[in-house]
Amino acid sequence: MLDLMFAKEFLRSHRQTGAVAPSGEALARALTRYVRPDHRTGTPRAVLEVGPGTGSVTRHIAARLGPRDTLDLVEANPRFASRLSAALVDDPALRPAADRIRVHAGLIQEWPLDRYDAIVCGLPFANFDPDTVRSILRVLLGALAPDGTLSFFAYAGLPALRRSLTTGRAHAQSVAVQGVLAAVLRDHRFRHEFVPANLPPARVHHLAATPTRVVAAAL
Image (cartoon, rainbow, N blue to C red; front, side):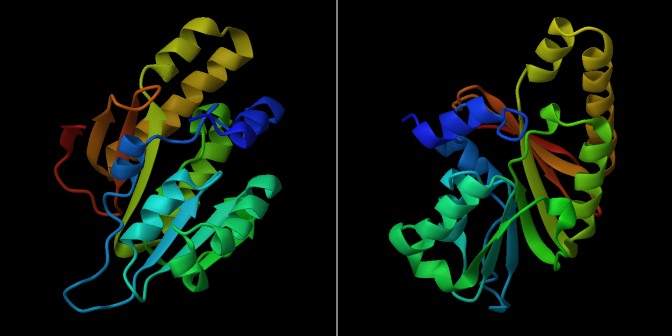
């Protein structure tokens, strides 16, 4: 279903809003795969979502929180942030955990972050310059707890398409961004998933400070 506010913000600023519609169910499930409570010890877990938009993935995260887990939402778009704050009161999927969810309006690079057991990132890295991508990923990886995970996605085939359709400075920037992402994935990725059911199809990357053997999966 088309989210009219999301589409409007895409038209207003597609650099910050990287898609015309929110993430689908299959993509949301993949992105939240490592958001799970500690059933063994009951220790509270801290979760961060960066770029939650209108909350399509946030609702999946909220459903996976343990009774003592917390969720921070950092959203650069003030209109999205305002909508999310209202949803904590009005949305039945978010209201049960509203007292443990905080909404922050602003850039992730500007927020003093805590340590997080799981980070879900929905930022459109392909739209940013390489220095911004490098800075954001450095901040997020630095905010991970020792056993924490960082999950983000990219639309399948978009990097190659962007390179083929751009020239000059735009082409060079696209190549540079992919170089930054490739280096981070090489050093930190422990699993990736292909999600063909999303529109458009997407690849989800799961990162950790100390990666293990890479596992590929398709949904």
